[in-house]
Length: 353
Image 1 (cartoon, one colour):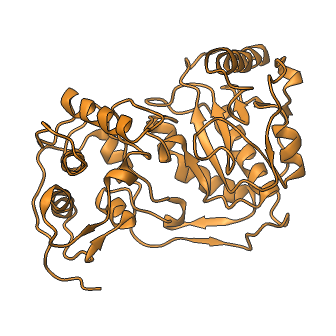
Image 2 (cartoon, rainbow, N blue to C red; image 1 turned 180 degrees about the vertical axis):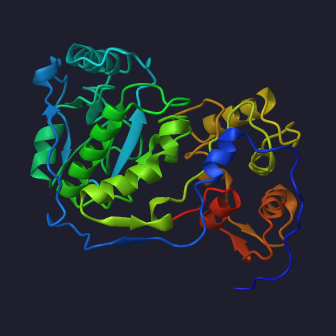
């Protein structure tokens, strides 16, 4: 593969937002190493934290049989409930939260039970979410099908964390419980601590909030430590996609505008500013592709479709998007074809695969 000339150096207008800086800052140079023997054995098992089962917090019966798959999950997805960061950290408050989530999922969304497998309160109380999740976890060989993230429900354990972590960090009690719960799940299923993700990695959503999402490298490192492993350097940073929303601006927004035009958006003026016209164009794009979230944000579901493979010299808006980002990153050379990992590096969110 050649690494010569062919890509331009067009620089986008405007400055990146705080969100873009946060996400871009996760892409550090170098390589990382996860030391120790990690496999599907229990040699690196972690102790089970206290977990309140469904009966303990007063769950309703599930309305249908909970599907259980004869396979192990391979990752953990971290969510936030997007509820108030309340000061009441009592068990009663935690149980009321769990009941409220179940009522919403069953009565409004018409699911058979709570969508996530586990819920952690701001007081650090870990609760079973969907029935049989705790039973199956303790066995460590099968997976309860969840409803926490389309496309991930039979391969990922979903954990909801009480609160909204867009501008606030989770309290220590919740954080410690999340770390210990993730370590236990990893030990039971043989999941590498690097395989901890946020909801936004797979959907166009702000979940689990900018602050909690930005703490995922720390979470991976701490979970590895609980398991007696050492996660070094960039191994704790996973390749991802940036989240773009109204009021964002800069080269990443400009590149996204070019990619939307490449995907067929009309009437969109590439100016590096995320306003209502861009949000409307994204909604049309999301609806056209049948995405779950038609919300006008670009995240882990829209980017992989927008950032298609682009060949050097093909011209058009897709190549303009590459040139915008290449100029921003100061790249001296690029491969002949821009694929997803290269896009992520250009977007400032590269990392370990």
